[in-house]
Length: 346
Ligand SMILES: [Zn+2]
Image 1 (tube, rainbow, N blue to C red):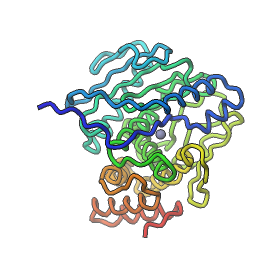
Image 2 (cartoon, protein in one colour):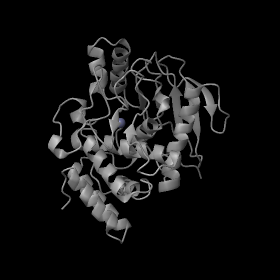
Image 3 (tube, protein in one colour):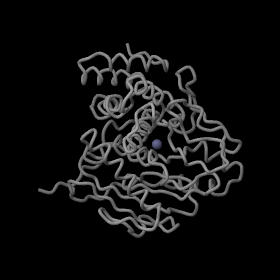
Image 4 (cartoon, helix red, strand yellow):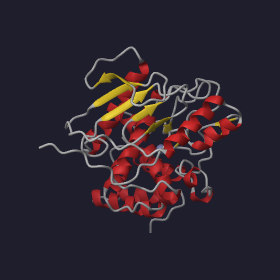
């Protein structure tokens, strides 16, 4: 019997991987590609996000990559389908592999059948727009710009960026965290956590070997920075005269009160990001196995309210750890990590 995938239970936040505070600053300095990218992002936010087309589930990974050929028309021309051979375009092949790596983490480690848990096909468009400085998931597909080459490189180059964006889809189908203030920062943080885990799993890295960066390799040569964010050391990813300084806090004492960026969702995510890093670092080994399992159980367990704040989320991770492991070691580690970022779970 064919079932059409259920529509997402919650509205999708329109998250672009480069947060508005970076593009705003570049646009103020007269950077033309950033200005055009911001205008496009605003237009995307104003439009209703696309629901994934209703197709009967294939019960396997199904990828389709299209090429917008530097236009703003979606989806573009299909250039690679599931099982097709690599083509002579690195952006196409990196997008194909990145969708596959994200599917692999969720399916092989957590037993999740694609983003919606019901075999949603994974589609992407590359070469979107003219030097477009961003990448996003629109509820139906991943869309990648080529970057301007001066500040940002090709957005297919970062596996964690692909995992980040697709995880917004997982959150949309599960906890549905409101994209505002602390619940919004948790939504962002979950995308960073699983984005990083997609990369670590694909590379077979231990938590000690991982770089814990989001968007490593995305900043063009000459920019003083290593990535968009650092989970290991929030606030240290870049410090550049054009980009400004990474504004992420690592502790509640430095929580940023702001009306912009939906209450600083890309800024205060540094706090739960760092808590996850501390759990993974303390437990050692592969971060997707225990730390990742606790966060995955929390995200999908059905106990979180869409308006959950950091404390509610932290308490839910403690409950998830206790539910999965009889041994107290993981639970104690989770409690200690939240305490280190200034959040009490008792
Ligand atoms: Zn995001």
